[in-house]
Image 1 (cartoon, rainbow, N blue to C red):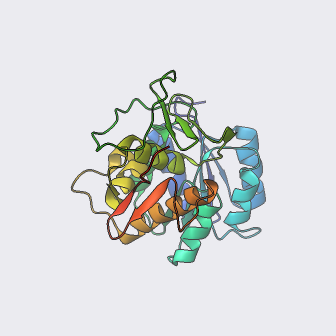
Image 2: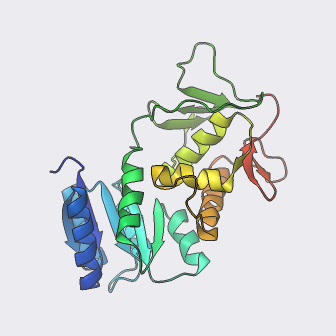
Amino acid sequence: MSDLGVAVVIEDDKDVRNLLESVFLHAGFEVHTASDGREGVEVVRHQHANVVTLDVGLPDIDGYEVLRRIRQFSDAYVVMLTGRTEEPDMLTALHSGADDYITKPFRPLELRARVAAMMRRPRNSGADRQPAAAEPAPLVHAGTAPRDVLEHRGLRLSSRTRSAELAGKELELTRSEFVLLEELLRAGGAVCTRADLVKVVRGDYYQDDTYISEADERAVEVHIGNLRRKLHEDPHSPQFLQTVRGVGYRLAAGKP
């Protein structure tokens, strides 16, 4: 296995499959490919994939079903690739557990950069990020808890163990959901714009002058919606994530 791990490309178009294989090989991955969904599931299983690119329109079973099967045994990062540009397709991919969604034709360098950003934030190890300066807020660091533990209203997040709990019950979060929740908790009540949160999800690839599309911001909205569902938020009285209309999101105010 290479230092970066194993990438699996599930794609029925030979030219696209060869391009993706080349992108991952040049990035330093060990690469395996599959031309249909059922084969792809087995390759991911047997090769212990770290990253998967998954075409939506496969000849046997669609990519969403492939993703559902992969998620039964693997927490590999999954990037959905599709020629479809409709918003419902993006929503379906992200709701199904994909970490990212890219439409064809795509830029190989962008794909490589997005994957690199994901790999810099592994699921099971914390990132050494310092809290941003923020206004007084309901964020609580428990007096006897480690510094990497953030708490608010029964929600407990640890960047070191890459885990989150609500009322003592573990939350099953995707990488994107975790980093967004961590960012909002660390902001301590300060407003995070949608553009800021896109950069959090995408990683260092997005610099201050990088163009951020409506689709990027919409993807953040989807992730926030998924977080709210997992946090059992009351949309009329949010306890955790508050929408700042026209701007972004913040941690809901109030005493923990």
